[in-house]
Image (cartoon, rainbow, N blue to C red; front, side):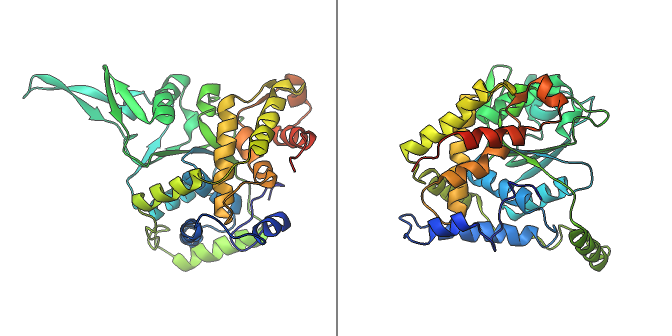
Length: 342
């Protein structure tokens, strides 16, 4: 489990406890916490461990942001996303990316209708509420670019006509590490549209034994069989509105901006994070604070969000990459160098 491992609903860090104890929330966040615990409970019927991935997926859902999940094959990336989608009473679509996939296979295309002697737009699988893109880095850049507009503006433009996506709309993509055979590097513009990049590791020995026990006890039953929808689109919309009202002090806005600014000035980073990154860090911090029952964000919220929100938005210099340095290490150093507001 990584250093920035997020706590589950049963355990909280000392800082979270100290900050949430002495005040009474001015916003009723009980609905958010109930929703979070219900989603966690359903997913944990099948998934063992992987608390960070689960919490960041829920945080992305509340912050209305897309999530990229990276890990080696077989660590339950796709299964977790499918379970999350089933806890929502919404439409779900899965797109398997392959090297021969074309943009029209994703967004749809105009087809000729012989009866009306006119062209009609046939919507592609991206027209859904929760869209799982499996192995997103197995498709080339031409196909990747088909997602730019829909991920940023939540609409598709074809032949001069614009088709908005029905809310809620969230893209959750999985990918294998870039060094694996048959993968393509995602364009920077594509990466910048993801709120988080979640890195999924191997389970511990105890967790793996529990996985084996669960698989044995289910026998031929499907993993999705007992998962219930616990969140309606209306409930999700109302909880997202509450998240947007989580208070952010101006000093904390400055704190976020300074950390992002440091990524542009660091000698270890070739390409720094964009202003969009600052906005996403703030929104994700609001969602994280709401998940923990606070109607205001703290510096600790920001620090917990920095790595998953920025690790895919920066490019290290070749020298640092050759030294084996990872983005998380550099981001922690930069965040530690910025004075924490009091």
